[in-house]
Length: 431
Image (cartoon, rainbow, N blue to C red; front, side, top):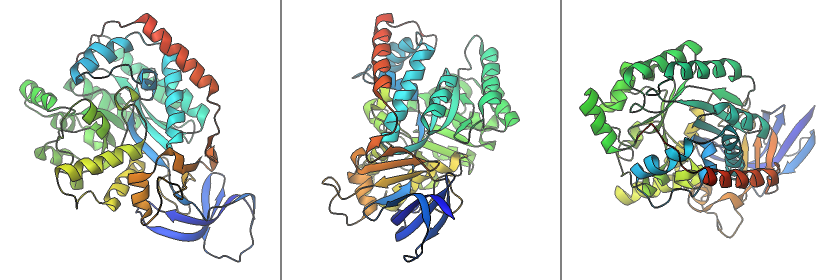
C-alpha cells in the first residue's frame, strides 16, 4: 500500500498529555489510518518525514474568537470595558463593511495557523464572509452568525441566519455553523428562546456570551430575578451543545443548569486587559468543561490559545494555590475544545483526522526539555511550531505559512485606513 504521508520516528503527545516515542504515523486521505512502532517494516508513501527531533500533538482549537476583529487590532487601548464597547468598538463596527470582515478574518486565520490553531469557533456578523475565508485557507471553522435580540429587525435577521445555516452547514468537512445569540443582555428571554428553538430545529449548537461581568449578573437578577444561566436554561438552551463565551461570573447555584455539552471558552488576556475581575471560573474550574479561546484581537491583541492557557494557569496559581492548575489539567483544557466541535479531531489515533502540530522544542526558548508539557505551556511560542497540518495537508511547513500573506496584509492595511477615514458611527446597542 502507498500512503499519502508517513511520519517516521514520531514522538506523540496525545490529548491526555501522555507521551509515546518512536512511532510511525500513516496518513491517507486526510486521516490517520495506522500507528506502528515496528522499526524494520517497509512501507512506501508519497512523502516520508523523519520526526525524530519533533513532538507531534493534536492541533489547537480557538474556542471563542471574533476573527474579523483583527482589522481592529490596537484601535481601542487603555479604556475600561464600558468605553471599549460603547465609545470605541461598537461605533466603529456600525460602519463596518463586508469586505472589512473578509480581510479581517483572513488576517486572523493566518495568525491562528502560525500559532498552531487548526480549528476555531467564531462569533460575528457578515458570517458568510468568514465562511468564505475558512473554505479558502484550509483551516476548520465553526461559525456562529451574531444575532441581537433587541434589534428592530430581529425576525428578519433570524431568518437570514437560518438560511445561511441551511446553505452552508456541512458543505465541507472543515465548515460547520451554529446560532450565535450575542448575550442574554442583548437577547431578551423571548428572542433567545426563538434562537434556541431554531437551533433545535436545524440540529446545530449555540455560541453565546454569558456573565462577562459582575454588573451583568446583578442587572439580570434585578431585571428578571434570574442569572444569565437560569434564563438560558429556562429557554432550553442547555439541551443542546453550547459554547459559553467567558461565563466569568458563573455562580455556584448556576452549576446545576449546565449539561455535559456546555463548554466554557475562557479568554484570560481580555479579562486582565479590560479589568473584568477574577470572577469564579478559577474557583470552579474542576467542575466545568473549560477550553481556551482568544476573544477578538481588538481586546486580546493576539490569537494564541497557548498564551491564554498560560495566563489561566498563572492567574490560578497567583490567586489560589501554586499546586493547583497542574500541567496535565491545563493540557486537558487545551484539548477540551475539540470535544464541542463536530470535526472528528483532537487526538492522535487511528480514525481521527490528521490535524496535527509539529513542535521543535530544541530551541533556546524551550531548552532543556525536562517535561514537554511544561516546555509547550510555559515557554513555547509560534517559532517552535514547525509544521501545522489539517486533513493531512500542510498549512505551515518548515516554519513557513503555505498561504501567501502578501495580498492579505496589503488589503488589511488598506481597509484599516478606510475604517479610520469613515470614523465612528452610532450604535444602538449598549454594554
